[in-house]
Image 1 (cartoon, rainbow, N blue to C red):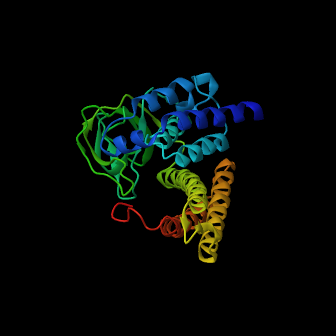
Image 2 (image 1 turned 90 degrees about the horizontal axis):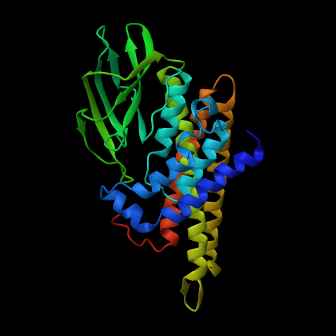
Image 3 (image 1 turned 135 degrees about the vertical axis):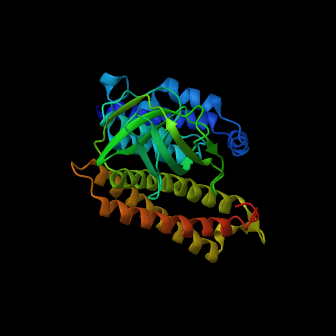
Length: 303
């Protein structure tokens, strides 16, 4: 794809998030309400198929474009499994499996997750804390068939799911596969370690996008909020905190860029992605604390 087409993808995503990621939508999603209008808009625009080749009905965009879309989604705290759907689409197309419509997720997402494909073609095992497990129409997963690793696509409907939520209020569910029948199976083009590294690169993009928004909100709040007759942005302590926050945002953004570049190489460099994930996580902790302080520590019992 050319640069103009790439820009259209990101611009389209940003407009959708601006229009449909309202506070009520995000709050309702945390209470278990599926944001149908948002998801439908993403599907209709083709953004859920960003990494699916054009010949298979997708956008055929580069990895960098998908990462940019995910950063935009995180800036608006989009409460949908867009990252998981893009990852699942990437995993399936790597194995030559057609990507179904609807929200997707992946499994396993933890190293202790073990899913096996029996000789009769059924899936068995358990995956912990699968993102948006309850909302997914299908799950793309890695399973073992003897010494071989395969990619399987299985419908989520009817699978035993134990619901839980993450600290971010997102569904992270335990999914049990008990003689589950997959819709498609193919030899895997990636192993579990590589899948985890790719997932880490995705998460770094989300961290960077969220921190960019946090910096924007914190600066604006400091300009708007007055104390002792002047905006708190005029106080040296606040300026120092905002400067530190800006540095952490820049570090997270650079880490995300590095992770994206590592994924684009012919052989994904997992060490660079691991470093990026560590630095992004560090920036998230520092940045969240500073933003909380700048906002006067309001709502501390929730955040």
